[in-house]
Length: 532
Picture 1 (cartoon, one colour):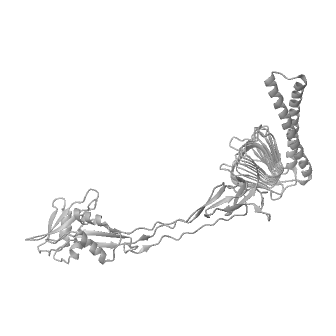
Picture 2 (cartoon, one colour; picture 1 turned 180 degrees about the vertical axis):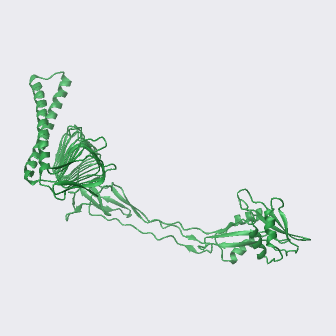
Picture 3 (cartoon, helix red, strand yellow; picture 1 turned 30 degrees about the vertical axis):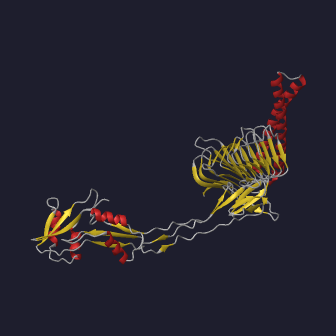
């Protein structure tokens, strides 16, 4: 304990003297006002305040100075106590005895505290130390209460991915409609999907007067869920009854059945075609086809593959198209990223980044990642394109189209089906080529008829690719020319750069300068820029 400087009053034959002791390094020294207050408290009036101040100023020369020719009466050491408003701390300062007065004892200090109603948290060890060290004029904590340990509300810990969750509607039969899907997370029968962390009631505190201080009130939690789940006997776990997928709508847990593919779609599974919803826990490897009449969820990556969903498509780790991937969905497409791919959907596209791809959505395209990049290639949407950044400082050519024209809708739909069929034919030929090449590698050569089959298959693949390219171009031009949606717009929540072409139907605007935080709409015959 660092001791402040302190003073002692001594009585000599010629009067009353003050002896000052210097403080420990970094501690507080004695002031003249403190001496005056002390003398006043002892009802000693026969002294001159100026003499006290003069003595303090000369303390470096002489630490003992006379303040009066009158002998001050002896008195015992004493403490002055201060109680905080919240009654959690008692601070005391001990003053020295005068003359032949006695020192304080620990029992006397405790008696003083008890007389003031202070019965809890008395720091007896500190009091003894102060008395033993004669730490006069040094504040110390004579008693300290215990603050309550605050409790915690019960919490529900969700043991599945609750981010980017859609808000699906629950049908009367208990199934979930995922037409506007954002994310699907798989669940297994008997899997614990959520836990309740029980309330922590906390620990009461107590003030120096002995009164209990209760902790704050805490709240309990209960599971909210639809069918296909049950609560454990201890009431703390929610468990799935079925294999399926799980989402969180508000604070309600929804579980629905789903078909699972536990591995990659590759040569161990072959192409997959399924009537209903499909979830792939791995990747879809290059050259393979995955088709479902309902929703498709891919937990991994789509490489240079064909994916066709009659409903919604979700790709958790993104699409690396290798300039080969053909992605189609009748509903929405949600992917971590899209790069070097062709993606077409009847609903909305949502991704963190859209790079060097041909994308077409009947509804909206939203690029909403950390950087939200829409760079290179072509993006077409019937209603809205939103991105943080369109184009880049390098002036990469980027085309963005919005609006529709119904006169070409039928042809566009026909082209969509033709493109899907051509891609499927290409994949079949690709499998033939793969088998024949493997046979040739194994046997060193092929029979003439098989060699001819290989060459013919490869020629047909090239022809199909050319045909797909032509049909895709016609399809994209048709989509561009469809009747315009008067509410169509392009929103930029960051920056748009030179090199970007914006098209509303047949009306085109080339961006020549960087613009920030704006939107583009068609007013009359012109495309105009407006603030967000």
